[in-house]
Length: 196
Image (cartoon, rainbow, N blue to C red; front, side, top):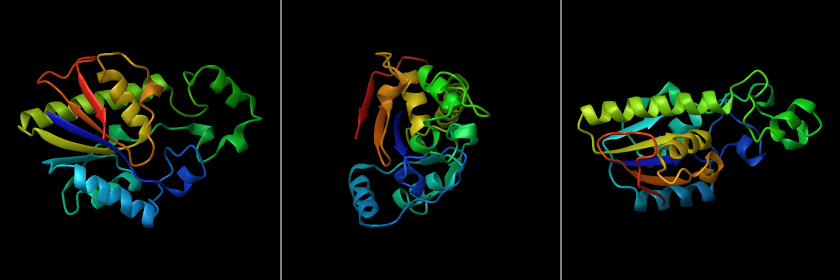
């Protein structure tokens, strides 16, 4: 099975380096987005399934890349709930003790009022395994997932046979990864993951 994991295009909050998880922003337009769209149209093959997060930024990005293709919304692919840090950036948070505690934990402590990385990653991976299993049952061999950066990081950390850590997979807006899986989708079994 061939899978394409694509991070949505930029939003206003992304440009301002804000923690954008539950905030439902639209993607930005402009010549940079047009170049991204053209580049991915050249390198992405036709897919039989487009799975997306329910957030506008993912659905809008998927429509640009796969126009008219039915989107299969998967709630498990939502970005992390950043709780009290939602829609704020470093400058707004740097003097708050709870933010410093989160930084000192290496991002492992739960966001105050939000999700922990462990819970978030577990949700993403569980949703991914369910979706891939469903695709296999439907005999779909090529699919795209238009999701969030954190979602991609959680899935690729889980799949990677080299066991590279979560932050190794940090992806800029619009990044795309190719993943080839065997029939059985298990932790650490994917030997081919590459950035496009």
